[in-house]
Amino acid sequence: MGDSSISIIGAGYVGAVTAACLAELGHNVCCIDVDAEKVDNINAGIPPIHEEGLEELFQKHAGKMLVAATDYTSVADSDVSFICVGTPSAQDGEIDLSVIKTASKSIGISLRNNEKYHVIAVKSTSVIKAASKSIGISLRNSENYHVIAVKSTVVPETTQNVVIPIVEEYSQKRAGIDFGVAVNPEFLREGRAVHDFVNPDRIVIGELDKRSGGVVAQLYEGFDCPLIRTGLKTAEMIKYASNAFLATKISFANDIGNICKELDIDTYEVMHAVGLDHRISPSFLRAGAGFGGSCFPKDMRALIHKAEELGYRPKLLRSVMDVNEGQPKRMIRLLERKLGNLSGRKIAVLGLAFKNDTDDVRESRAIPVIKMLTDKGARVYAYDPAANENMRPIFPNIRYHSSAKDALEDADACLVMTEWDEFKKLGDEFKVMKNRIVIDGRNIIAFREHIDYEGLCW
Ligand SMILES: NC(=O)c1ccc[n+]([C@@H]2O[C@H](COP(=O)([O-])OP(=O)(O)OC[C@H]3O[C@@H](n4cnc5c(N)ncnc54)[C@H](O)[C@@H]3O)[C@@H](O)[C@H]2O)c1
Image (cartoon, rainbow, N blue to C red; front, side, top):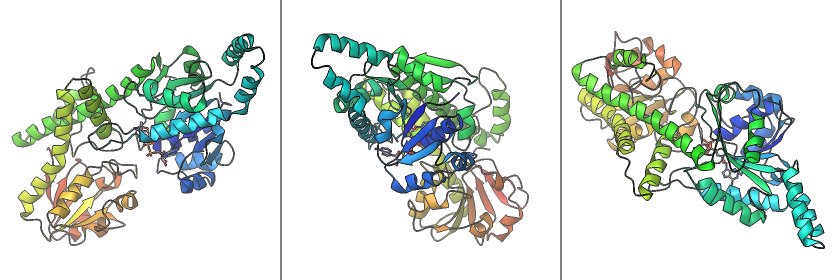
């Protein structure tokens, strides 16, 4: 299936997974990242992130089908470059496109420095008209129609209005003539990223022209799923609409869960039955501490900002965010109801990653919870099976432990923030606590007999 040459710009979660999976499919992949340590690690077969199956792929392909560099020289010689750099929130929720702009500029410079194009330009000076026509035809037919595929999540119109003009300016080439452009949003779930890359529900390709889309579509030949080929801004919007809908389901489940709690109804029983309706589906109906991660919160903010910039106030999307912000506060309220003043109390926080099976702490719900605890004078004893080190720069002054039991030792209470499998098995470990108060933010604790258990929405 493989044998294309591919550059991956930005070797973070999306870039590293895309690179490893495309190498596995037989393509020659070069990861480009500004982080020299990451690049050295990739070349040594060490993946930059913790994801099931990724280490095996890196060890198998590093130095062969998969290499890494800090410079953009590979871009001009590749068939496709995937832009996979971060698109975080700016101060007011607006999408921060600064890294996208820098990457676009570097791609442009690399394409400009491509000798093949320079030679054609020099030759064309003598018989300018005929030559220009031939160049156009030749470039169109050329194997070297480099396609820039935007995988980063960017608000609609970004590729057309930001990426293309920057690449054109720095490459001195024209989109649709000298190089192609596509938008190929990524829908992988962290924790299941490798699996999701090779088993997608659908592949979406927004294309500047058929040729650009065709080059990207070829990379996915043999994938058994619907392939949607559409325009650039439609593909960009599909990604936002998907994330907004999933975030809405979570906040809906939390809103219903909060009502259920007041009525002493098990919201999980309710949502199990609700999810059996095929129009609804059982996914994303688990009430709890809310959504975090590198995507939902910032994508929601970016979409809301974009809508408001256009003069539309998206009331539903704003409420989804409001419900989400409220869930960590509810955890602290439940804790205070049990313990009273938190000042000086020792609180164990189990789970720092924004979800299980990842070391990613970006916008983890543990962050507002730990912040509220420390603001109230509590002493926080934290444990996560994979994410302690990633949380340390955010909260350097709390205690980190290497097991749940260590964190629970002598604790006044415990907050469970992440659905790690190992937390399901916790039982005897709670016996080392001073007060066995457990506030469960994820409905994960199975042994509830000998503890003072409190579910967040159940
Ligand atoms: N994380 C996810 O699960 C996920 C899923 C779907 C889509 N996305 C989207 O994909 C994009 C990337 O997300 P991520 O989580 O992989 O980000 P990330 O922060 O993990 O990785 C970005 C990488 O880009 C590198 N980088 C920064 N500036 C660069 C430059 N000028 N040139 C080359 N590399 C540079 C960084 O060093 C980093 O390694 C975002 O737009 C995100 O919204 C993420």
